[in-house]
Structure formats: structure tokens, C-alpha cells
Image 1 (cartoon, rainbow, N blue to C red):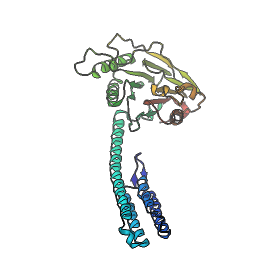
Image 2 (cartoon, rainbow, N blue to C red):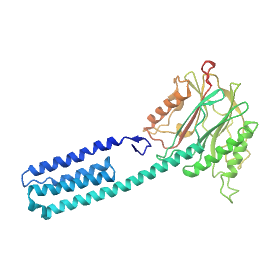
Image 3 (cartoon, helix red, strand yellow):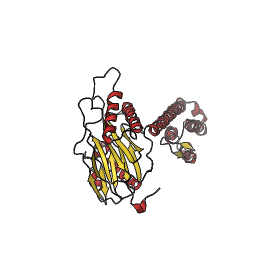
Length: 373
């Protein structure tokens, strides 16, 4: 078995079957050229055989087909006219085939080296994702969760969007955020905030104290050494929620982040923060207030926490993805089923490619009859 760039295993039999195509071409061209009138020369068409082989074969396969093409060109000269084998025209055709074959083999060697590098990069990015953004547990107390992360970069698995969940003595706390900027700096900033959240989420007694702690962490830890007076260079929008196990009211602090949406009976309900706080990292510029707000989250509801990479995704005409309008009427009450449908709908809307990273966490509060351990 061979491994493709997407990490999937591909049967070697497929490549072995395709090699029959250039071999058949070599045989056909050789037979026709030998039987053709003396003034017709089809030997130059042999170059097509090694030329198409890199589309399915590696350096060895290309070298084999190129060698067969050179042998066929030599045999044509011998069979048609032994004296023609030494002619300048025939020698030029053989030399051309050799040069083309060697060039294609070199190309395949560099292509395979590049493919191995891409596989290694993807492996490292997947490992980084597992460390920075491990999958959320499917079960968090009485809640069920599902997550979605779509990186804008083709070879990336993680960017500046983040999410995490922590169980406390009385419920579940979650954070979904978006780091300003892109690239490895954004990944590092996301990792720092997630680490601070996981450490403090079960220690801070109240939600506003937790958010204040996270803001201080961003203000001091994300600045470059010696830049103690430069607040605001890096900031992170985030929404932090506390979902009690025995209460159907969700407590929330929004720091400049898109509002949560509750899907209830196919009807999306946007939960806008009446008094949103500034993004994390801007607390050093002014005295920030972290007002805790609340809303209903009943059995059978789905709670959607997401980043602006979703609501700012554009279609071919440049129109933003209308989240609440698209999901209106969806009757999924299972978070996994919702995420699968949502992913397909979003990618179909944008034509398969996003301009920005996008993340979503879906929390399900099952009804008593559907509660799973």
C-alpha cells in the first residue's frame, strides 16, 4: 500500500494497472511506425509514454517506461532500415528520448521529496492540534458536545481560533475565541489562552473573576519582552459560558465575540450580550467591566458557540454566510448530526474553501429520555 498526500492509503495495484497505458502506447507506435511507408516517421510520438507516466508512477516507473521508449526507438530503426539507425535524425530522436526520460525521473525524485515533506508537515500540524485543541469529550456531565474546526490554510490543521471545556463541581465552563492575526503567532497566542483557561476555569469562583484573570494573562503574557506599555497589540475575542448541571440558565460573558445561538425546535434564537466587554488583551487600556448575563438553555436545545470565520464566510457573490437563516427549520437535536450537516452546508455555501479559520462548538442538553451516560 502507498500513502497519498491526504494521509489515506492507496492501493499499489492502481498504479501497476496504469503502467499498461504507456506500454501499450509504445507497442502501438512501434508497430505502426514499422509498418508505415518509409516517408512516415512516428518515432517522436514515443515521448508521450514517459511524459504521462509521472501522473501515476514514481521515479522507477518513469525510468522503466523511458528505457522502453528508447529501446523501441532503437528497434524501429533496426527493423525499418539498419542503416537508418546511425543516421543523424534517428540518433537525435534517441538522444531526445534519453534527455526527456532523465528529466522526468529527476522531476519525480523532487516531487516525491516534496510530498514526503508535506506529509511530515501535516503530521506535525495534526500533533499540534491534538496538543493545543484536543477534541472535546462527547459527554460533559449531563451535556453532550461536538466541535468543528476548519482551517483556512490548505496545509494547516490549526490557526487562531480556539475552544475548550472544563468540568467544575457544579457544571461545565466553555470558551470559544478568535486570536487577532494569523500564522504561528496566532497559534501560540491561542495555546497560551487555552492553558490559562484550563488552569483557572475550576479555580475562579465566579465567571467575571475568571474572565478578568484571562484578560490579565493575555495582557501580560502575549506582549513582547520590554514592551510593558504596549497594550492592544494582541487581543482575543472570546465568549465564556458557565452551564450549570441543575439549572437551565446559562451564564455568559462576551468579550467582543459573535453571540451564541440557541436552536430550539428548529428556531434559532440569537443571544446578544447587552453589555459586552472589550476583547481579552485590551483590559490594560481601560478598566473593563465583565457583566455576567444569562439566558435559557432547555432540554432538547442546541447551543452554538462559534467564531466570525463562520458568519464572515462569503459565497461567490461576496455575501456573508447567514447563520441563523441557514439553520432555521433544522430539526436536528443531536449535536453530532448537526455538526455534520452544518459542515456540509457551510462548505457548499463558500464553494469548498474558507478565507478565514472557522470553529464551532455545539452543546446539547438532552431530554431525560435521550440522556446518555
